[in-house]
Amino acid sequence: MRGVILGLIIGVMAMVSCSNENDNNSVEPLIGTWKGTTSSFAGMELSPQKFVKFSSNGRTEFISTVSENQNISRYGDWTKNGDTLTITWDEGNPYILQILELSQTSLKWKNDSYGGQISGSRYDSFER
Image 1 (cartoon, rainbow, N blue to C red):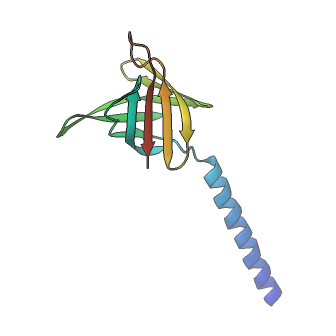
Image 2: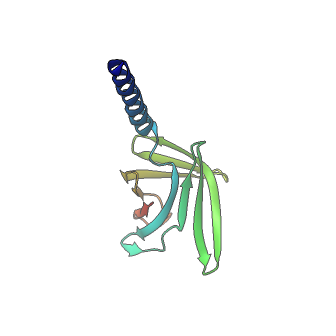
Image 3: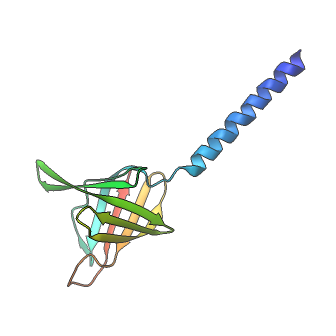
């Protein structure tokens, strides 16, 4: 009887550990809410995005501070292909980013076309 119970316990533990491992590997680390920590353009420090949210349904929201008590949100769709993150704003403008670092707690990206007529790259960092 002990052997049967021990066998059941080992079998259940093996199924639970495999299930957790597979769940963790299939989750896109980009999904969730990120808090802006640093931002720069052409070597000049900028105010970072307040928050960026990525949903599993392919939607994103960028929340920026306009004044001390006012935030604005911008919405769009996101896709990720390797280290390229493309955000197509609801207004239709694409925003193409190169992901420099992505983990469960840190996100860093670069955008080379940020400045319009001014050449340079924008770098943004986020944390959870």
